[in-house]
Length: 214
Image (cartoon, rainbow, N blue to C red; front, top):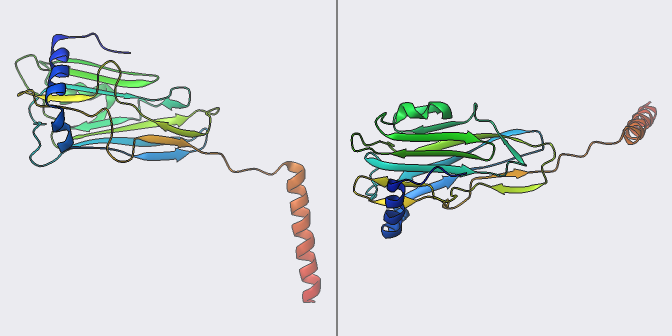
């Protein structure tokens, strides 16, 4: 799923290709979580500018943020998920409160993605402050195959930030460990008959020890 193509997005794509080396000055990190089918877990994506970064997070002209996951294995809990940037920290549906109302905002959460696009309209630039923290909460499907489920940050467009000087960077790939959920095999539960035998054996063993102690 993609938002409609707009002129500023085209400019951002060009800016990213021209100024792509600036991406190296931004730290993009994901966290990992693991659980069994049926468990609810949370993971984070952190995008943090370094001192002297060419991209000015306080004067943003375009912000494109997209996170994708495997919807057959991971069931998104949008009401429990949050995002923090600038002066805003809260639910996904209220994200507009942290961005200039004069800009163009499109934001939606669907089964397999959270998508956000904000565009400067020539009036007020946005400030992402000291960075972005996205916290996603997911319930592992009861029939989810075991294994690792890494998150993606691009579709037709990449996750990116462009400032007023058209300095830009693309954070479609995390640095270091990826944002990922691992589905593990639940611990084995003994069959009723097997459990009965184990308990009987335990009882017999305790009885023998008592007799020896007499």
